[in-house]
Image (cartoon, rainbow, N blue to C red):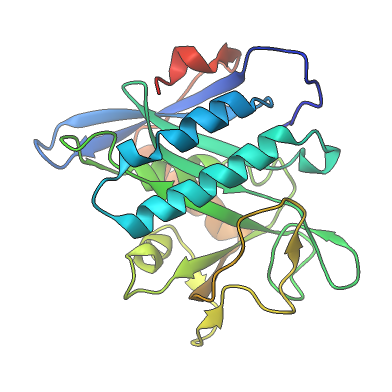
Length: 258
């Protein structure tokens, strides 16, 4: 994703990347979920998105907090015109013009030696990156859709080779708090060791974006390698009938209604 340094354009660009075949948990019917990539700075859209968080998940306060923190991070990225953000990805899942997922990845960090890296893991490999934020939710209280997480992560997997990354690191929530670890395992990630780690420590590589303060939560560190990424991407794309679109920039108002 290229973050524009121009502050003059009143419109906000988004690129519709693909449709993925998901399913409804209520009637087992097919639901096509679109994935779009945000490409230009527009804090007005980010502000509207943040104010709409309460509408997306009314029963799960933990998930709502994650969505809000991810949206705050999205806003700070979109407000920045820094060139080091050129590999950063912001993907939004959309169903019937309603947002239902947000993924942010490849946020640049700085390690203890002052080197630019893309993973918060201490002593990470040179071509390792991180899936920094992932949140999915029901587009409305009546419509529960299965497969949104796989669609948006699958789309992200398809960008890794182009950005010259090899491995993806993720800090998963503990299994007693959510099904995140099970989900990541279903997408090919493997836990690194059997210990639980603090979300942030003195040796954690620091984000160059002013993200929300890390909490004292513990996490399961997980990793997926390039070979496995390619395998999972191919499999998920086939099973979920991924359909790619000719990529062109569109006004965000034409894709998402908030």
